[in-house]
Image (cartoon, rainbow, N blue to C red; front, side, top):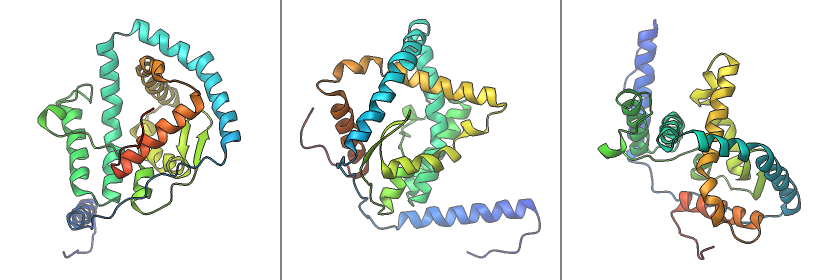
Length: 241
């Protein structure tokens, strides 16, 4: 591939597209390298339990009541439209991280889903891509780091954000930088969009709380780590909980 000197924006855009194409093509010949799974170690359990208790208090006294009210007044079909909208915005993150992992198929799928759902799907309110056979392929920067052989580090509970590994916690930062929600202006609208996403997600989890048995901290920790490890390695957990 030959590049010529650029003297205007159109030429620069062409060069960027050429580079993108080259990276995507290399994805087809990249090795089938296994990503590093998560560590199930919890050396900071005492601190994690304290932060977990703080998060749980905030959830019980603030977020959960708001989510219950939202769930009561908002019809389920409308909640699904909201979920679809934010899921569609997440395709930008999926595409960026798939590209960084040289996964050409996943990159093209995410771009295709975003384009189709943002147009035919009325700004992402409808998931038109899935019935067309273009399934969602979740990616984030924590998964990208795993693909790059970065160790997961131990389990950690982040204030307000909940369970993570050190690796996935670090991944929050670059993922937030590519989120379309960050460019919403004015700031009051941006805060509203973030709040709506959080409340809608919490409302969707209300029915799942009855599945928690025994010690809440241990249950949620193990559920998070096992699900995360499955996403990375495709390996099912050894036991059910």
